[in-house]
Amino acid sequence: MKVAIPKERRAYEARVAATPDSIKRMKPLGLTFLVEAGAGLSAAIPDQAFVDAGAEIVSDNASLLAQADIVLKVGRPLTAAEGGDELAGMKSGAVLISQLDPYRNKEQVADLAQRGITAFAMELVPRITRAQSMDVLSSQANLAGYKAVIDAAEQFGRAFPMMMTAAGTVAPAKVMVMGAGVAGLQAIATARRLGAVVSATDVRLVAKEQVESLGATFVFVDDEEARQAETSGGYAKEMSDAYKAKQAALIAETVRKMDVVICTAQIPGRPAPRLVSDAMVASMKPGSIVIDLAVETGGNCEGSEVGKIVARHGVKIVGYANVPSRLAVDASALYARNLAEFMKLVVAKDGSLAIDPADEIIKGSLLTRDGQIVHPNFAPAPAAAAQ
Image 1 (cartoon, helix red, strand yellow):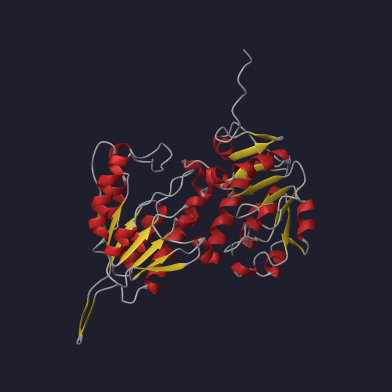
Image 2 (image 1 turned 90 degrees about the vertical axis):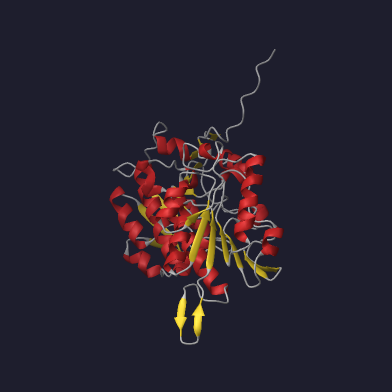
Protein backbone atom coordinates (compact mmCIF):
# COMPACT_ATOMS: atom_id res chain seq x y z
CA MET A 1 0.00 0.00 0.00
CA LYS A 2 1.05 3.56 -0.68
CA VAL A 3 1.03 6.13 2.12
CA ALA A 4 0.92 9.79 1.07
CA ILE A 5 2.14 12.74 3.12
CA PRO A 6 0.91 15.96 1.46
CA LYS A 7 2.12 19.46 2.17
CA GLU A 8 -0.15 21.23 4.66
CA ARG A 9 -1.96 24.17 3.07
CA ARG A 10 -3.87 25.81 5.91
CA ALA A 11 -2.88 29.22 7.18
CA TYR A 12 -0.64 29.15 10.28
CA GLU A 13 0.27 25.49 9.67
CA ALA A 14 4.00 24.68 9.53
CA ARG A 15 3.90 21.05 10.70
CA VAL A 16 4.14 17.89 8.63
CA ALA A 17 2.45 14.54 9.34
CA ALA A 18 5.54 12.35 8.92
CA THR A 19 9.25 12.68 9.55
CA PRO A 20 12.18 10.57 8.38
CA ASP A 21 12.17 8.94 11.81
CA SER A 22 8.47 8.06 11.70
CA ILE A 23 8.80 6.67 8.18
CA LYS A 24 11.61 4.39 9.36
CA ARG A 25 9.35 3.25 12.20
CA MET A 26 6.56 2.36 9.77
CA LYS A 27 8.79 0.68 7.16
CA PRO A 28 8.46 -2.78 8.77
CA LEU A 29 4.75 -2.66 7.89
CA GLY A 30 5.69 -3.11 4.23
CA LEU A 31 4.39 0.25 3.09
CA THR A 32 5.54 2.58 0.32
CA PHE A 33 5.81 6.25 1.26
CA LEU A 34 5.13 9.18 -1.04
CA VAL A 35 5.92 12.70 0.20
CA GLU A 36 4.87 15.86 -1.59
CA ALA A 37 7.82 18.04 -2.52
CA GLY A 38 8.47 20.66 0.14
CA ALA A 39 6.11 19.09 2.67
CA GLY A 40 8.66 19.22 5.47
CA LEU A 41 10.52 22.43 4.70
CA SER A 42 8.65 24.57 7.26
CA ALA A 43 9.55 21.95 9.88
CA ALA A 44 13.23 22.01 8.85
CA ILE A 45 13.03 18.69 6.97
CA PRO A 46 14.42 18.84 3.41
CA ASP A 47 13.13 16.50 0.72
CA GLN A 48 16.44 14.63 0.68
CA ALA A 49 15.96 13.59 4.31
CA PHE A 50 12.72 11.84 3.33
CA VAL A 51 14.47 10.20 0.38
CA ASP A 52 17.24 8.96 2.68
CA ALA A 53 14.53 7.42 4.92
CA GLY A 54 13.17 5.48 1.95
CA ALA A 55 10.35 7.73 0.73
CA GLU A 56 9.68 8.94 -2.80
CA ILE A 57 9.19 12.66 -3.48
CA VAL A 58 6.19 13.54 -5.65
CA SER A 59 6.09 17.05 -7.09
CA ASP A 60 2.38 17.19 -7.91
CA ASN A 61 -0.30 17.08 -5.18
CA ALA A 62 -2.97 15.63 -7.48
CA SER A 63 -0.69 12.79 -8.53
CA LEU A 64 0.25 12.14 -4.92
CA LEU A 65 -3.34 11.79 -3.73
CA ALA A 66 -4.44 9.79 -6.75
CA GLN A 67 -1.94 7.06 -5.83
CA ALA A 68 -2.59 7.07 -2.09
CA ASP A 69 -4.19 4.20 -0.21
CA ILE A 70 -3.58 6.04 3.09
CA VAL A 71 -3.18 9.80 3.53
CA LEU A 72 -1.53 11.17 6.67
CA LYS A 73 -2.27 14.81 7.48
CA VAL A 74 -1.86 17.22 10.36
CA GLY A 75 -4.90 19.45 9.86
CA ARG A 76 -8.38 19.09 8.46
CA PRO A 77 -8.41 19.09 4.63
CA LEU A 78 -9.45 22.34 3.00
CA THR A 79 -12.89 22.43 1.40
CA ALA A 80 -13.75 24.11 -1.89
CA ALA A 81 -15.34 26.97 0.06
CA GLU A 82 -12.05 27.47 1.93
CA GLY A 83 -10.05 27.93 -1.24
CA GLY A 84 -9.19 24.45 -2.43
CA ASP A 85 -10.78 21.00 -2.19
CA GLU A 86 -8.08 18.79 -0.69
CA LEU A 87 -10.33 15.73 -0.80
CA ALA A 88 -10.95 15.97 -4.54
CA GLY A 89 -7.89 13.96 -5.48
CA MET A 90 -8.46 11.11 -3.02
CA LYS A 91 -9.85 7.88 -4.39
CA SER A 92 -12.87 6.14 -2.94
CA GLY A 93 -11.81 3.56 -0.37
CA ALA A 94 -8.70 5.48 0.66
CA VAL A 95 -7.95 6.03 4.35
CA LEU A 96 -7.47 9.50 5.81
CA ILE A 97 -5.78 9.85 9.21
CA SER A 98 -5.69 13.40 10.53
CA GLN A 99 -7.02 15.87 13.05
CA LEU A 100 -10.46 16.58 11.59
CA ASP A 101 -12.22 18.80 14.15
CA PRO A 102 -15.47 16.88 13.50
CA TYR A 103 -17.67 18.63 16.06
CA ARG A 104 -17.28 21.95 14.28
CA ASN A 105 -17.24 20.49 10.77
CA LYS A 106 -20.07 17.99 10.55
CA GLU A 107 -20.72 18.83 6.90
CA GLN A 108 -17.22 17.68 6.02
CA VAL A 109 -17.75 14.46 7.97
CA ALA A 110 -20.79 13.78 5.79
CA ASP A 111 -18.73 14.67 2.71
CA LEU A 112 -16.03 12.18 3.70
CA ALA A 113 -18.65 9.45 3.92
CA GLN A 114 -20.19 10.41 0.59
CA ARG A 115 -16.80 10.19 -1.11
CA GLY A 116 -16.22 6.71 0.31
CA ILE A 117 -13.20 7.75 2.38
CA THR A 118 -12.39 5.88 5.57
CA ALA A 119 -11.56 8.69 7.98
CA PHE A 120 -9.96 8.62 11.42
CA ALA A 121 -10.02 11.73 13.64
CA MET A 122 -6.90 11.58 15.79
CA GLU A 123 -8.27 14.00 18.39
CA LEU A 124 -10.98 11.41 19.17
CA VAL A 125 -8.49 8.72 20.19
CA PRO A 126 -9.67 7.72 23.69
CA ARG A 127 -7.48 8.68 26.61
CA ILE A 128 -6.70 5.18 27.82
CA THR A 129 -3.35 3.74 28.84
CA ARG A 130 -2.92 1.72 25.64
CA ALA A 131 -3.45 4.83 23.50
CA GLN A 132 -1.07 7.20 25.29
CA SER A 133 1.53 6.95 22.51
CA MET A 134 -1.16 8.00 20.00
CA ASP A 135 -2.57 10.95 21.96
CA VAL A 136 -2.07 13.88 19.60
CA LEU A 137 -3.96 16.27 21.86
CA SER A 138 -1.50 15.70 24.68
CA SER A 139 1.64 15.80 22.55
CA GLN A 140 0.64 19.07 20.91
CA ALA A 141 -0.89 20.70 24.00
CA ASN A 142 2.31 20.04 25.94
CA LEU A 143 4.25 22.15 23.45
CA ALA A 144 1.53 24.80 23.34
CA GLY A 145 1.69 25.24 27.11
CA TYR A 146 5.44 25.72 26.98
CA LYS A 147 5.28 28.13 24.05
CA ALA A 148 2.53 30.17 25.71
CA VAL A 149 4.89 31.08 28.53
CA ILE A 150 7.74 31.88 26.16
CA ASP A 151 5.41 34.10 24.12
CA ALA A 152 4.26 35.82 27.33
CA ALA A 153 7.85 36.44 28.38
CA GLU A 154 8.61 37.91 24.95
CA GLN A 155 5.67 40.33 25.15
CA PHE A 156 6.13 41.22 28.83
CA GLY A 157 8.14 44.37 29.46
CA ARG A 158 9.73 42.98 32.61
CA ALA A 159 11.77 40.00 33.75
CA PHE A 160 10.08 36.86 35.10
CA PRO A 161 12.41 35.92 38.01
CA MET A 162 13.26 37.91 41.10
CA MET A 163 16.60 39.65 40.64
CA MET A 164 18.57 41.27 43.44
CA THR A 165 21.08 43.82 42.22
CA ALA A 166 23.06 46.72 43.66
CA ALA A 167 20.58 49.03 41.94
CA GLY A 168 17.59 47.41 43.59
CA THR A 169 15.40 44.33 43.54
CA VAL A 170 13.26 43.21 40.60
CA ALA A 171 10.09 41.54 41.86
CA PRO A 172 9.11 38.21 40.27
CA ALA A 173 6.28 38.17 37.74
CA LYS A 174 2.92 36.88 38.94
CA VAL A 175 1.45 34.38 36.49
CA MET A 176 -2.06 32.88 36.49
CA VAL A 177 -2.73 29.73 34.43
CA MET A 178 -6.39 29.06 33.68
CA GLY A 179 -7.01 25.38 32.98
CA ALA A 180 -4.75 22.67 34.40
CA GLY A 181 -4.88 20.14 31.61
CA VAL A 182 -1.78 19.10 29.67
CA ALA A 183 -1.14 22.60 28.29
CA GLY A 184 -1.83 24.27 31.61
CA LEU A 185 0.44 22.01 33.62
CA GLN A 186 3.28 22.53 31.17
CA ALA A 187 2.68 26.29 31.33
CA ILE A 188 2.88 26.14 35.13
CA ALA A 189 6.12 24.18 35.03
CA THR A 190 7.67 26.50 32.44
CA ALA A 191 6.66 29.68 34.25
CA ARG A 192 8.07 28.28 37.48
CA ARG A 193 11.36 27.45 35.75
CA LEU A 194 11.54 31.06 34.60
CA GLY A 195 11.17 32.20 38.20
CA ALA A 196 7.58 33.44 38.24
CA VAL A 197 5.19 33.14 41.16
CA VAL A 198 2.40 31.00 39.71
CA SER A 199 -1.28 30.49 40.51
CA ALA A 200 -3.62 28.19 38.60
CA THR A 201 -7.26 27.26 38.41
CA ASP A 202 -9.34 24.46 36.94
CA VAL A 203 -12.92 23.26 37.35
CA ARG A 204 -11.63 19.78 38.26
CA LEU A 205 -10.72 19.35 41.91
CA VAL A 206 -8.39 16.50 40.95
CA ALA A 207 -6.13 19.13 39.37
CA LYS A 208 -5.35 20.65 42.78
CA GLU A 209 -2.73 18.08 43.68
CA GLN A 210 -1.10 18.28 40.25
CA VAL A 211 -0.95 22.08 40.36
CA GLU A 212 0.49 22.16 43.86
CA SER A 213 3.05 19.48 43.02
CA LEU A 214 4.49 21.92 40.47
CA GLY A 215 4.82 24.65 43.08
CA ALA A 216 1.79 26.73 42.10
CA THR A 217 -1.12 27.94 44.22
CA PHE A 218 -4.53 26.45 43.35
CA VAL A 219 -7.43 28.93 43.06
CA PHE A 220 -10.73 27.09 43.26
CA VAL A 221 -14.32 27.20 44.52
CA ASP A 222 -14.64 23.86 46.30
CA ASP A 223 -18.23 22.59 46.35
CA GLU A 224 -20.17 19.44 45.42
CA GLU A 225 -20.55 20.35 41.76
CA ALA A 226 -16.81 20.90 41.48
CA ARG A 227 -16.16 17.43 42.85
CA GLN A 228 -17.99 15.93 39.87
CA ALA A 229 -16.57 18.17 37.16
CA GLU A 230 -14.51 15.63 35.23
CA THR A 231 -15.74 13.16 32.62
CA SER A 232 -14.68 9.53 32.56
CA GLY A 233 -12.39 10.44 29.67
CA GLY A 234 -10.46 12.96 31.74
CA TYR A 235 -11.97 16.09 30.21
CA ALA A 236 -13.64 18.97 32.02
CA LYS A 237 -17.44 19.13 32.03
CA GLU A 238 -19.47 22.25 31.32
CA MET A 239 -20.36 23.80 34.70
CA SER A 240 -23.64 25.36 35.84
CA ASP A 241 -24.22 29.11 35.63
CA ALA A 242 -24.31 29.35 39.42
CA TYR A 243 -20.92 27.70 39.79
CA LYS A 244 -19.47 29.81 37.00
CA ALA A 245 -20.59 32.97 38.84
CA LYS A 246 -18.88 31.93 42.08
CA GLN A 247 -15.70 30.89 40.31
CA ALA A 248 -15.70 34.05 38.20
CA ALA A 249 -15.84 36.25 41.31
CA LEU A 250 -12.85 34.46 42.83
CA ILE A 251 -10.92 34.54 39.56
CA ALA A 252 -11.67 38.22 38.99
CA GLU A 253 -10.09 39.10 42.33
CA THR A 254 -7.06 36.94 41.54
CA VAL A 255 -6.59 38.17 37.96
CA ARG A 256 -6.52 41.77 39.14
CA LYS A 257 -3.21 41.06 40.91
CA MET A 258 -1.56 39.20 38.00
CA ASP A 259 1.08 40.30 35.51
CA VAL A 260 0.42 37.43 33.08
CA VAL A 261 -2.68 35.32 32.54
CA ILE A 262 -2.42 32.20 30.36
CA CYS A 263 -5.76 30.75 29.23
CA THR A 264 -5.82 27.08 28.20
CA ALA A 265 -9.38 25.91 28.90
CA GLN A 266 -11.18 24.04 26.12
CA ILE A 267 -14.09 21.59 26.06
CA PRO A 268 -14.29 19.00 23.24
CA GLY A 269 -17.19 19.72 20.93
CA ARG A 270 -18.10 23.01 22.61
CA PRO A 271 -17.02 26.66 22.27
CA ALA A 272 -14.24 27.60 24.66
CA PRO A 273 -15.60 28.84 28.01
CA ARG A 274 -15.31 32.59 28.59
CA LEU A 275 -13.08 32.96 31.64
CA VAL A 276 -11.64 36.47 31.41
CA SER A 277 -14.09 39.31 30.84
CA ASP A 278 -13.28 42.74 29.50
CA ALA A 279 -13.79 44.07 33.03
CA MET A 280 -11.14 41.66 34.32
CA VAL A 281 -8.73 42.81 31.62
CA ALA A 282 -9.41 46.41 32.59
CA SER A 283 -8.59 45.60 36.22
CA MET A 284 -5.10 44.35 35.35
CA LYS A 285 -2.03 46.52 35.62
CA PRO A 286 -0.85 48.37 32.49
CA GLY A 287 1.71 46.26 30.66
CA SER A 288 0.14 42.97 31.71
CA ILE A 289 -0.24 40.10 29.24
CA VAL A 290 -3.06 37.66 28.45
CA ILE A 291 -2.24 34.61 26.31
CA ASP A 292 -5.38 32.94 24.91
CA LEU A 293 -4.62 29.40 23.69
CA ALA A 294 -8.33 28.82 23.08
CA VAL A 295 -8.73 31.73 20.66
CA GLU A 296 -9.52 29.44 17.69
CA THR A 297 -12.53 27.91 19.44
CA GLY A 298 -14.05 31.19 20.59
CA GLY A 299 -11.48 32.29 23.15
CA ASN A 300 -11.28 32.21 26.94
CA CYS A 301 -10.60 35.96 27.02
CA GLU A 302 -13.07 38.57 25.82
CA GLY A 303 -11.52 40.61 23.02
CA SER A 304 -8.96 38.04 21.82
CA GLU A 305 -8.65 37.68 18.05
CA VAL A 306 -7.22 34.82 16.03
CA GLY A 307 -3.69 35.52 14.85
CA LYS A 308 -3.49 38.95 16.47
CA ILE A 309 -2.12 40.81 19.48
CA VAL A 310 -4.86 43.14 20.68
CA ALA A 311 -4.21 46.04 23.07
CA ARG A 312 -7.09 46.73 25.50
CA HIS A 313 -6.94 48.87 28.64
CA GLY A 314 -3.14 48.88 28.46
CA VAL A 315 -3.05 45.06 28.41
CA LYS A 316 -1.83 42.93 25.50
CA ILE A 317 -4.18 40.05 24.60
CA VAL A 318 -2.20 37.56 22.53
CA GLY A 319 -4.24 35.28 20.24
CA TYR A 320 -1.64 33.41 18.24
CA ALA A 321 -3.23 30.75 16.03
CA ASN A 322 -2.06 27.13 16.01
CA VAL A 323 0.50 27.55 18.77
CA PRO A 324 1.98 24.03 18.45
CA SER A 325 2.89 24.90 14.86
CA ARG A 326 5.03 27.73 16.22
CA LEU A 327 7.35 24.93 17.37
CA ALA A 328 7.01 23.07 14.07
CA VAL A 329 10.13 20.91 14.36
CA ASP A 330 9.26 19.32 17.70
CA ALA A 331 5.50 19.39 17.09
CA SER A 332 5.95 17.52 13.80
CA ALA A 333 8.25 14.96 15.40
CA LEU A 334 5.77 14.19 18.20
CA TYR A 335 2.70 14.20 15.96
CA ALA A 336 4.42 11.94 13.42
CA ARG A 337 5.35 9.52 16.22
CA ASN A 338 1.68 9.49 17.33
CA LEU A 339 0.59 8.58 13.78
CA ALA A 340 3.27 5.92 13.43
CA GLU A 341 1.95 4.20 16.54
CA PHE A 342 -1.63 4.51 15.31
CA MET A 343 -0.69 2.98 11.96
CA LYS A 344 0.22 -0.25 13.75
CA LEU A 345 -3.48 -0.60 14.58
CA VAL A 346 -4.77 -0.20 11.03
CA VAL A 347 -2.08 -1.96 9.00
CA ALA A 348 -1.28 -5.67 9.30
CA LYS A 349 2.25 -7.02 9.22
CA ASP A 350 1.78 -7.98 5.55
CA GLY A 351 1.05 -4.37 4.65
CA SER A 352 -2.69 -4.76 4.17
CA LEU A 353 -5.45 -2.80 5.89
CA ALA A 354 -6.59 -4.43 9.13
CA ILE A 355 -9.22 -2.17 10.69
CA ASP A 356 -10.85 -3.88 13.66
CA PRO A 357 -14.04 -1.95 14.53
CA ALA A 358 -14.21 -3.78 17.87
CA ASP A 359 -10.90 -2.28 19.02
CA GLU A 360 -11.56 0.49 21.55
CA ILE A 361 -9.13 2.91 19.94
CA ILE A 362 -10.45 2.27 16.44
CA LYS A 363 -14.05 2.55 17.62
CA GLY A 364 -13.35 5.86 19.32
CA SER A 365 -11.58 7.52 16.37
CA LEU A 366 -13.22 6.03 13.24
CA LEU A 367 -15.55 8.60 11.69
CA THR A 368 -16.53 7.20 8.29
CA ARG A 369 -16.27 3.86 6.48
CA ASP A 370 -17.92 2.20 3.48
CA GLY A 371 -19.83 5.34 2.61
CA GLN A 372 -21.35 5.70 6.08
CA ILE A 373 -20.76 7.87 9.15
CA VAL A 374 -20.02 5.20 11.72
CA HIS A 375 -19.05 7.20 14.80
CA PRO A 376 -22.06 7.32 17.15
CA ASN A 377 -21.50 11.00 17.99
CA PHE A 378 -21.90 12.03 14.34
CA ALA A 379 -24.07 9.36 12.71
CA PRO A 380 -27.49 10.67 11.66
CA ALA A 381 -30.34 9.69 13.92
CA PRO A 382 -32.38 6.72 12.60
CA ALA A 383 -35.60 7.69 10.86
CA ALA A 384 -38.71 7.35 13.00
CA ALA A 385 -40.72 4.24 12.31
CA ALA A 386 -43.86 4.77 10.22
CA GLN A 387 -47.06 4.88 12.23
